[in-house]
Image (tube, rainbow, N blue to C red; front, side):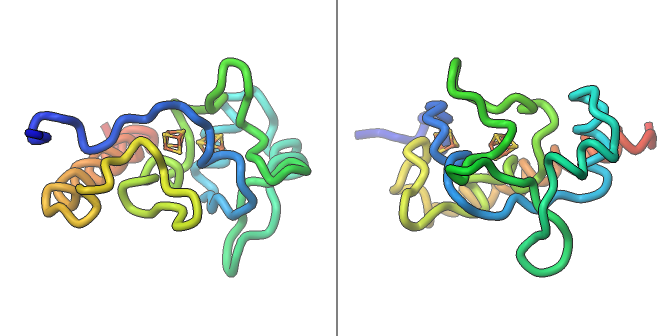
Amino acid sequence: MNTANQPLFTCVRCGQCCRWHGYVQISEEEIEHIAEFTGMDIAEFYEEMIMPGDGEGVSLSEKEDGSCPFYVDSPPGCRIYECRPAQCRTYPIKWNNPEKPCPGIRRQNIEHPTLNFEYSKLKFRIFKERWHLAGKE
Ligand code: SF4
Ligand code: SF4
């Protein structure tokens, strides 16, 4: 079967990546941006949405079941999708959950050289968005 024209990754919105215990590292800039997007003040955001990270830095907090506080069940998805942290944007291209791999990525492409190119494009897009957010253009 010719898979050349199929996308390397298509999110099927299963929500799996947002519903397990883990650390979603988040920067100060991202916190400010998401707080503004959600209409929360910074102090409230730190109080309700942030917990210590795995090592240095901080992480998004989690609900009792381990899911992200920004994940909603119906319709399933991320409440802050447009400004989700870089760690979320690079999933599953840069990293994946080995126990529950993302069903949206084509397994045969994990070692595919084009995947690295796709990841480079994704990084460049994130860089441009951050540059824009920082008021550089
Ligand atoms: S696990 Fe993959 S397919 Fe499911 S919501 Fe996350 S990115 Fe999308
Ligand atoms: S911020 Fe959005 S994409 Fe990231 S883990 Fe939370 S719900 Fe998922």
